[in-house]
Length: 264
Image 1: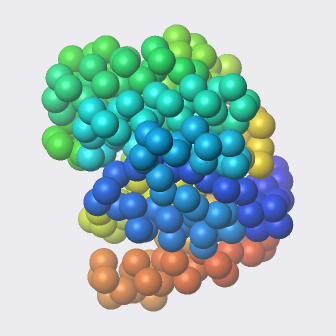
Image 2: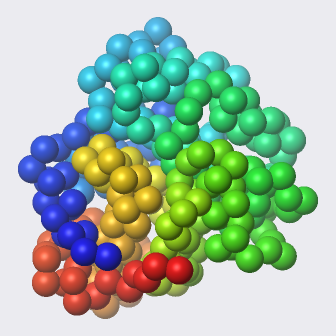
């Protein structure tokens, strides 16, 4: 895939506002990662103001990680407003497959407004697709399914881009499917790396209308920064700080040299 770094440069140049209704556990890191990549984060879930905030935004990121009914109502208002404005909605189905409540919430949200991107680990995405799986809280459970076909089929069903994150990421819009193999194992040891990935996807979708390409580009840049950080880290604590630093240091040379992306 070409022009990955050009999309990052466009983010840095235009600083799109990304409105989040997100996981309370990781909200600070999601705001930070948005800023480090060049976007402008706003974290607002009050139903009294979400419609007005969406009017200012270039994309909307929703994350069901710390789900409650009040938040669901705010997500509906924000999602419907985003649809009217014509900006992308990214839904991180964090914890889908863990409880009946989360599964029902996913169905409710997906039926209430048009979602541009659905993102999750393989068991979360399998749960959204209706497969009989068990997610371990917010960690992936075992799934006996081909993830390329899973992503492609669900993309066609929902008319949305599907992003499956893991050691290998899969991005599909139902027609084009991409595999991304950047990243490092320590990312799986740190709370919030999945939530932050959704924020980065939101940043790139705000500047690139082909959302499959935007998602793939976002993950490549995000995970190359992680690879660079891992080289000088002693463990999770030093990794997080190094990771944030390396995002700001991403260059065209490093992205083009290190990207591991292929079309399936």
